[in-house]
Image (cartoon, rainbow, N blue to C red; front, side, top):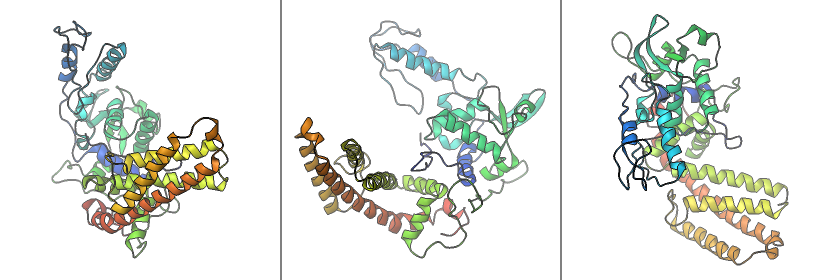
Amino acid sequence: MKLMHLERDPLSDQISSSECVIQIIFQRFAGHKPNTTPLRRAYSHRLQSQPVEGHSTPPFGGPSSSTATVALGPGHHQAHYGTSTAHYDTVSSILTRESVDSDDSSVSDMYIESSAGVHVHDSKRIHLKEYNNCFSGIAAKLWLMDCTSIIFAVEVQMILTAFLKYGLITPADSRLMAMGEKFVMEKNAYYCMSEKGKSLAGWPSSGSGRHHRNGYKFPTSNDSNGPHRHSSAIVGDNKQSRLEHILGDPALRLLFREHLAENFCDENLTFYLESEKLLAQFHELEKTQFPTLQKVNVCLSEAWVVYHAFLAPGSASEVNIDHLLRQRVRERMTTDEVDSLSISGPQYTALIPTSVNKLTEIVKLLNEVRMQVFRLMASDSVPKFMRTAKFLELGIEI
């Protein structure tokens, strides 16, 4: 599955809750049309019928065998289970999760394609009243957990509550209306897409044709959420100022990251943001004159993480930079690794100046890489992004 990556504040690590960001998330949540595809529950039976490796009888019944691969259904990697009781807990939790909502509104293999949107009921009777395009609270929660980069339920609650706050969904039950803007993530709590939400998602209208997709609402100087940097005026005449504007706005950064991912170069943005965090951490230490060796070593370890993730030979997210610069970085990091391994014990604790010098050199090199990646994105990726339908739909100039 292709996850929707939600942008976070580099300092607080909080997901932006500005109206524009919430609208973009909602469009993915709703999908281009109502997702009324019937749910499949076959994969739970596969779990029950497959034995676990090392056991003559599978813990959930089924044919006997000495080894087996437990399939987790469409969209999941296969998992090979051993004899530990933790494996039973893993399988059991999957079965429990599937049975959370027996009303055809939530199982993990429902969301094999995130762009389809949350599962909705075409028609459902709730308290003697018929509702169209409604969904359960638990189905909404699982879509955000399965299809986005969110890992904490409290963040799911924040986003779903924002859907209510901005009038994109409405409660289907008067008891839920009495709870105000708090979203209830439960099986028997049902919500409907509002007309505003359907219009934003571009759903087919009840008549002929489709809803006209509304533009996004960008933060203004009076908004309390998100950066106050959007304007209909041109921000700058050069590509670098445009990229700075994009990186400074969570909504634009989210769309820009999706564009980079579609072109298989989103590692450039990830590296730039991670190295920016490292640079901020270094400057903070510099202000306090590098108080302890422990803090210097923590910053050094962060530099190593960035190097191994984006610049080391064979790294999974290797960025595309000049060969000579890459060679300089690798030579410096390799030398540092050898030196560090040769020092241990009490001798190491007395080497703050040496460690500071190493950190300064490494950060300087990584900053060179960071600026080269920035120029690459500004000259190549930004012009292409500004020609995409996603950007043109915003109706703004930068």
